Length: 337
Image (cartoon, rainbow, N blue to C red; front, side, top):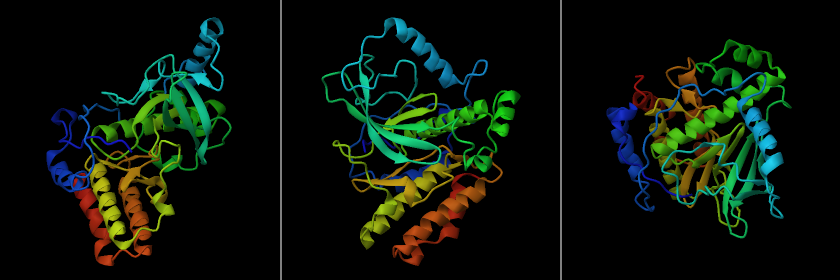
């Protein structure tokens, strides 16, 4: 995974110095062995990302319709093997400054190399983006399903504390109409893009969010250049010394997130990747605001117990796995103690 800085937070973004200083001291221990890149500026983020629409089309549907109309008159023939022209021009883009590996050339094409993972709410494909005749860069394309699925199995509790701007949208989502299901898909995509942008900016080990276009996210591919994806933590059987190091990384990430007032909400060994000895957190559409969501502490507690249970089953000593003490520490980091 490409590295990025973990410098002090910007006061202008409203981050708490007291909640973050000790966390950064701990987290810095795991960064000494990795190459640094220039620091990224902190952005401000909405606490309730919501799709924007006109009529009965969602944001993504309107954009795709407009592009199809325009392309019917102006688009040149795709190069052989390519699936589409780059969608960078009409997408919501990741935090600046953009990493130098991000392809911004509008003459680039996207080539779908196959499915990396299927899930109940989204599928992840491997996509190569680059100008024809060049090697390009590998990306993970996460595409949320909408209309063909009756509901999202996790949405009820996680949507508490999130706001939509229109009551009609709320009713459509609650009734699971075709329009409402598409709105839910876009809301999950928007929520994950916002969470990844926010966490990347503060130095958390997450994939860089390249862009969002409707219900599709293009993310940094975590793996090898030949297309082999990094394994999930659940797939590994670490040696005792490595196991303790991974636990320390995991608790440091939890504290970093809690310092921002958020919890993963669905954390387990299945949504942590291990790439070149580093943990990488993935699958963040359900990120929970510990203040706004009335069940925030319950989600935080579940994250900790899911993760500590996996490490305990792999033989990590119990004196390192005090889940209750860790939850208390995270609540203090979030300023909720």
